[in-house]
Image 1 (cartoon, rainbow, N blue to C red):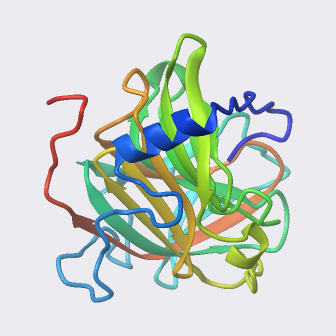
Image 2 (image 1 turned 30 degrees about the vertical axis):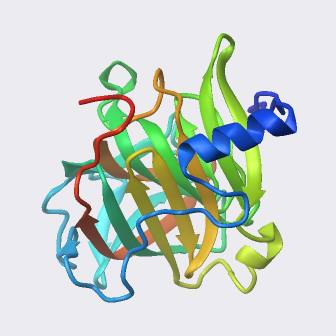
Length: 263
C-alpha cells in the first residue's frame, strides 16, 4: 500500500469526447464494464497453499510462518522492517483469477497487499517486489485499491473505473465511471475478521473484489508500464508492528489473449 507521505500524481481529465473515445476503444462502457466473469464455482482453480507449510513460496523465515492452517506474516516494534518485504509464490501468472481470504490484526500499522504480475527487485533486497498490488490495510482507507509498488503509485482508488494510457509526462489516468460507493464497498469490514479478495487479470483489464463487491476496474493501455505476466506475492509493510494472515489461496488460469502490446 502507499506510504502516507506519498503524493499521488495529478489526475488529468480530458474532454468528454476524448474520454468516451478511449472507453469505446477499450471495450468498456461507463455504466457496465465488460470483463471475463469468473464462475461462482471452484472449477479450474489450483491451491497455492497446502495449509501446512510454505512449500512453493519464498520469503524471510523470520517474518513468515504457518500456524493453524494459515500463512502468518508479522513484524514487531522491537525489530521494525526498514523496507517492504514479500512472501513470493514460486510461479508466474499472466491471465488469471486469484481468490484468497485474509485477516488483518487489529493493532499496529496493518498495512499489506497482494502483488500480481510483479517482478523481483534484487538490487533493493532479496524479497523486494515491484508491480501491481491489490491493497489491504487495517483502517480501510486504501483497502481494495490498485497500487503499483515501486512504479506509478496509486492507479485506481476504491470505487473507480479507470483507463490508463501513455503520456509524455509518464502516464495518463482517466476516471471513466464507478463500480460502487467507496464506503459501501467496505461496509462491515472489520480488522480481526476474515475477508475475501478476488483479483481478475484478463489482458489489459484488471479487477479487484472485496467480499464479492467490485472495488476497482482498470484498463491499463499504458504499454510502457503495463505488465502482462509476473509473480504473485504477499506483503509486509515497513514501519511499526503488524500482523497479516492468509488462507485458501487459489489460482485459476484464463486463456491467453492477444493484447495490443503483442507477444
